[in-house]
Length: 178
Image (cartoon, rainbow, N blue to C red; front, side):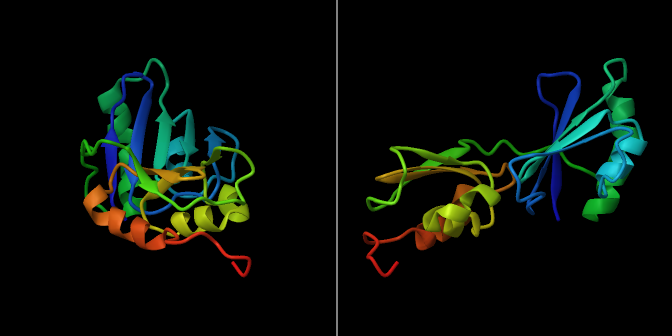
């Protein structure tokens, strides 16, 4: 697994991006002292993290407000390195735009004009959404009757995942047998 670090504008958060799914849920949250956190989260919490929130390809780590960022990174990143198998955690690349729209034939099964899928678990009721979440790199989806807006994980490049997304999209309107 590859992991990269982002230092956002919020001085109390460090974000780690991964190239493997971290959770099938919308979000999983763990706090210091709660117990039962999986690796690397238990290691990060034991080394001073206040809380960790995971989404599909992203982990937000809250540090104590009075902690120095560099010292905090030196304390918690050994747990991230052990978990990912990396010797060090590099800075996240700037791979924008995060969202891209793909044409999709009209899907009469859409409940409304727009359906948002923030996790693989949420996609269970939609064949198109389930299929798209099987593509490595797809982080979120918004389906409309004529398009699929796809958000990718930061560590993925559109040139690498767009062909898989296009292959996964239906090419004709669904039939009753679908």
